[in-house]
Image (cartoon, rainbow over all chains, first blue to last red; front, side, top):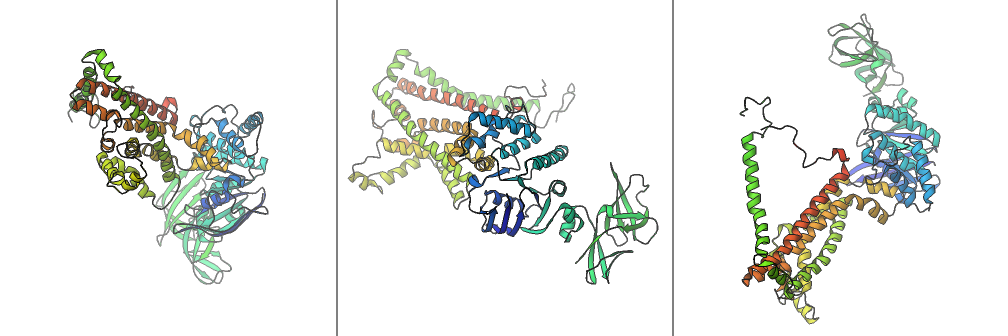
Length: 339
Length: 299
């Protein structure tokens, strides 16, 4: 089911949570709404679900205007951040609930058969008789997903699906959710504030700030071509250096890098930790190492330049470095944004 | 902190033996003399003149009538206030509306107002000199010094019990469960009966039990509006007072023993319900037991 949001607006009391968002989601697409807290991402998801009504604008499901369809009839599967499993029902009863209350009447046996099928899909065979309090967080998450899928939703909506789980479980579930999406092909929107999660999982990432879309595209597009300093910072660690543009070249300290299409004057240069390197000879930004942090996959170096700017960059694990060393930071890659 | 030399660890904060023993002793002393002793006296005095006097007092028509009236009042007031409590708790915890805080305060009023004030207020509203008095009199409707007045006063006094139990629980539960049920296609009624009610039932029953205990025991407000007509508008608590003033101490204690038995059953029900309520939330293994020994022990 294709979903189209057309200039939707939502205001809570005096707070404008969503300011005219337009977005098209293709049938079968897996889209991430990514943004910091207060960016309106959850509100947008809840409006698509019908749990919240838009103050302005329209939401289309396919050719149908779904703006005023109540949540009960909208045919969406919603997975809540804290799962919202019914604590007094077993896992199987939770999954069967949607089929039992549906206007479409089903045979008891058909419901039971489908519950077993869904339990297998979410790899929870044999846990049908447990209560939600008796299973782990990751298992609850999967029950919530099975329950949402039980009603054959046209759209699957997930609010911070992995937010409450620890890192290892999160990583496995991410891969697994991607597989399920591949298998079922349901149009899916999920909300997250975790860039890594959005980039790992989604076909397309929609980045939000203060109730408006600031950039959208495939993970590759947004990573390689962030259109603003906000997106650059939000997608990952970034070093910021004050720079000066002179005829298409950005100069920062002793380093320079090509910056076409930017007018002469002051600018900021953004570089990822992996985009900087260290050498004992210039040219480069003269700096002193404050600390070296050792990590399983390399060394993270904290340095400060002569003008007091703090920089962080990564070097390979074998590199011999220690705090107090002096040398030059060189720039391999960077993005330049005018101030 | 004074630690005995034999002790390997210093006591935890506030856990010195002297302090412990003094505090526990004091609480036990007060509990026994202030709470338990009067209850024992009721039992002893009720049977002071033997079983026959006791059963004669209980089966006296006036006493039986008082019991019937008390039960009737409870049969009306408890369901009405249960419905009110659920409705109020639902509105306050699931909706946002203007005047929500005001409603919260209004629900609390019967707790903070002396019941006698409530009774007097009813006099001013429904009494012959009251606002609706002449109109009611013209239609020949008797509210004061009759059963409707007793029920109204009881309703007022016990209005907060169910709501007070439910509001904190439903606030903690939020709206997620209802939203989940609705998004799965459940109707409003279905959501209420399949999702909301099962999750509040222990707290609800607890509120009902407390509400019932108060309805049956209410004296102040009912005393003002009932008129104390023996065999007609006397509830059990009023009847006890009447017997006592008639120097029928044994009769008064016999009648009081009925209320005391109700109270004991209420407490048993309360403890049982609290256990069920607690058991639902955590797995049985994680449930703390009142009887389990504290981790560290010393003499």
